[in-house]
Length: 323
Length: 185
Image (cartoon, rainbow over all chains, first blue to last red; front, side, top):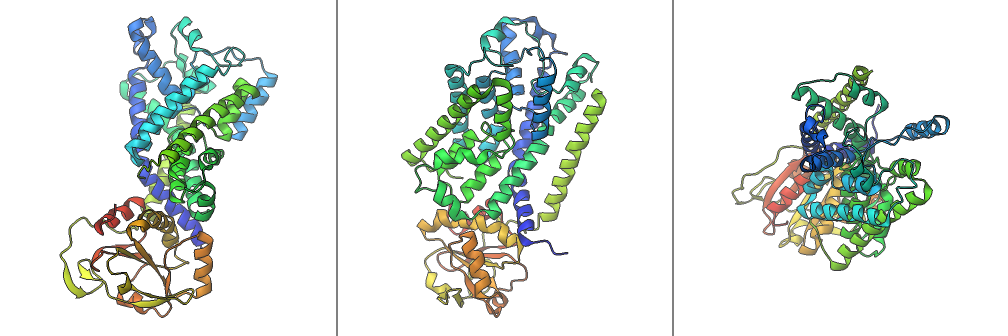
């Protein structure tokens, strides 16, 4: 049986993306697992004491955990949605799931920053500034956490006792937090590493496959005509191309590189870089479940506006970041 | 419950890593990188350090293409074919490099191996590739350059010396490294 050359070409491109960004993702996963293990409250009870001096460590852990949301599939979303209708609401978890906090955490996650660094240090700086900016704006415009079904404001968080529950833990994992878990540092590190690697291995693989397909099958002229240097509207359109991606920060970088290869202007792929981890169909659906339609639209508009504006600015100033 | 979830997760991660590793090993047929500086020899031979053998072919529009006409410009000679998957995989990267360096004179000659005009024209136009595509329908240039696998690339500097070669496909990094040897980047 002869495999069509385009299929093999796509696999080769997939390999290229994995080789190019894989080490940065592995480093990010390992670093994050190490930090989370070091900040583990089960073995570091000082963190639970509520001391003001240690509060920043608590925030650091919450920030790290919020940076990798559990990847969602349409099936899990439907199941959760149906479950919400028929079952009583779960009590609000004392997690900083405020959309501003989470958006900033995803944008400036270790994986997002390290993969951006693979492209260029300037890209890392842009991602950092834009991520913080989006987080700040979402706080400012107040994606009304009071009316939301699950969100907690920063103010609420400060009032609550400092107990930690992972934002990404499934019910089975939540059960495990009460049962005796692995005790040695290495065992806990291994558990954290796997918990981190899990979304990256599945969602990352999916995102890289999409990027490889895009690189091989989409003609350059289409991208150049829509997002090229001659199109001022490119930075406004580019964020929409990430809708099909899985919302795991850092793994969208392959699609950003694919856009750059296919002839998108610098502003367009910078806008994509900022928006891709935050505006995906799965991510939006999850937000819609938690915050309702109006607030989800506000969230998407804020992200899209910031990403588009930064992209337009990059094009306007003629910044040519080497990628 | 915890253990089964942990094991499931472990298995899933393990499966992906095995898949990725196997894929990487299978597809890493991209040759080796050349870091040493080549000694220049003023003889024509398809080897690094030698002058690139001249050739004249026609592109799919019937227009004549002669290598020596591009003296003074850095040239990438890329031997390829539409049936070759690694050639297809590296073409978007070549297009990106061509777009980037065309302003400083980069010339890319994509020498197609033994295919007819319509096949090449359709593939090139579908993919929006904009560099020059001469057709070596009788395989003479392929023999001159001793091309045994596709794609094979020769990086020729402004003086006409071959500074680097590559047997097999190139990723972004590999292409940039070799273009740097002919004074780009």
